[in-house]
Image 1: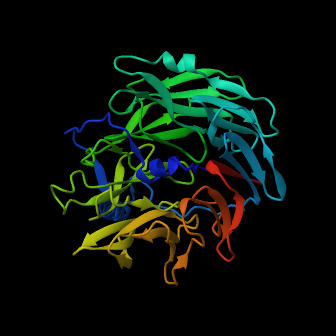
Image 2 (image 1 turned 30 degrees about the vertical axis):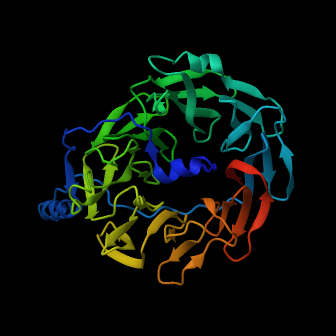
Length: 428
């Protein structure tokens, strides 16, 4: 699924965190197998003609033809606007309300958005505007000291007009996630509670075939079918202390054949034990997890470790003597350092899984690190945020409230000004 960048969502995406609600556990992690052990066992078994089934090693994703028709839904001055390549922008909503946070379906036919805290949708031709989740429905989840219930995060599921969303409660202290997961059909308006409050919460990621989604939580990773059935925990890990209110949810990258997933688990208490390693795993849908590599990384509140889109490498930051260095390690445990600076923050990987975007100290000066090549400046403006790759060479970003599109070989082009959030999809 294309996704998803919004101005306010940038902080959430970069932190991949939840609001407070999880607590640490001393429950041990599930059994794991080291890759070297798996290889040794396979060679031994091969000698007697019986090779045991083992989690497959990482594979390179098969490239697909790149779509060219870019569709961008964005919010400007309280309206939702649809921009297409070589087509004049179309205003989809013109209410006096504050429409924001657009999300566009994979087929480009439906745009969902928030209007004064309620979830709405509109068709790509500007017709069919309708409320999907209204204030009365949200108030039905009020309890205890919750003053008002809001939609915390929402997005279309792959190749459908169904929207996953979760809620949080506004209190006199801090926002409290309800730890739920719900679904609404933008065509029929049907609402379904997939995981009741208290039984969900976390970061969901759909498998490439769209049949499953992973739910990364504070101490485990679950796999569920898209209707919420076949719910099972496939991996347990120690709670990663952030020494603050937010909870770390580990990144999940699915294999391109949907047979399993990759994840990286940082040290559980890096301030207490700076030598505790971060661990990189492959987790099959059936069978035991395999530990691919481990390494010492900086704390997650400085920079998250990022798995490449093909799953076979991890970019991370390590600190030594007041200097931070950007490393890339792969499943063969080859670990290389590429650049150093007093402060480094990884933004994301390029879709080619061969280049990493980062900035050193100043967010306004992002760099694309090309392994073995010269670094490529990504910004040609005064400010820079909301980086979203459209292809290996094209990307969207925000210069303050300007939405801009750039090809690496050309200056950026202004899409519109006064933009407060956007999302995009590529169509054939």
